[in-house]
Structure formats: C-alpha cells, structure tokens
Length: 178
Image 1: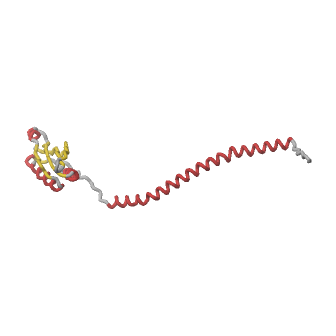
Image 2: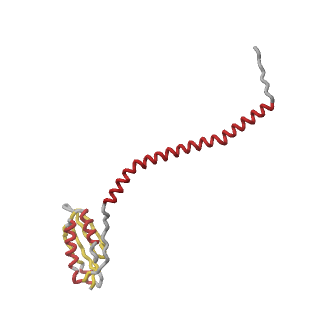
Image 3: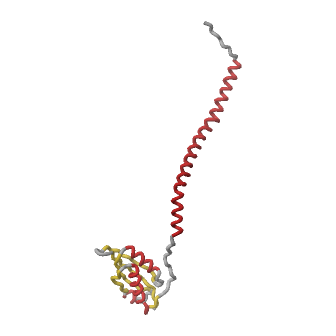
C-alpha cells in the first residue's frame, strides 16, 4: 500500500488558523447573542399573545358590565342643607320619624326626647328611638333620616337580635331654635 503524504505549507496553515479563528469569533460575538435574544423575544411574543387572548375573552364580560352600569340609575344619598326646627315644633320630628319607620317596614317601639338635653341651653335635642324589624329596612330608614334637614347627627346605633325580629336603638340629635 501506498502511503500518501499531504504537504501543506506553513503559510497556508497560518491562514487556515486565522480564518477559522475569525469564523469562531464571528460565531461567538454575533450569532450566539443574537440566538439568545431571539429566544427571549419569542418568550415575550408568546406571553403577549396569551395576554391578548385573555383580553379578548374578557371583552365580552367588560361590555356586559358597562351596559349594566350605564342602564342602572345611580342612587345618590340625600344631603339637604341643614336647617333648625323651632322648639314649639319639636313633636313634628316624632311624627316624621314614625311615618318614615312605617314606610321603611320597621315598627316603632318607642321614641322619646331626652329631657336633660332640653333642660340645658343646648341648641340640640336628643331623641332616643327604638324600632324593630329587618336589617335591610334599617338601611332604608337611615337613608330617609338623611333627607330630614334638621337632623344634626345620629350618635349611636345599638343592634340586638330578639326572638321575633332585630331591635335597633338609635340616638338622634335634632337642631332646635329656642
């Protein structure tokens, strides 16, 4: 058998090493970072596509909610300008309170003015009210009380569960003029 010798000059080997070094340099510096950045971009694109699909799925719910909000009438709580009730008309509040409690679905157990607040020279008269009924009806009554202009504040509400219904004790301050 013949053994053939390949003879390559030293100069060619140097060029071969330099060219392969340049190719390796271009691959390491240019292509590998570009490949990594491409992988990261693909992850971001997939994430954004998932979010877009999620938003498309939620679009029908959003439109349904906006339609229901626009169709409902907004409930605005009453806030009349504050007035003062003359002392001689103080029983007017008792009639208004009993009527409001009845309209709200509550039963008035008692409604008494606190005579100690009447005896002092205060500009306010305290009423202690006790009503019975359902909790939902208390909300209706409190909204109605907010519509009475001479009520200064509601100081305290005590709620107790009784055997037949809930009992609500309320302290109401009304503004009076003497």
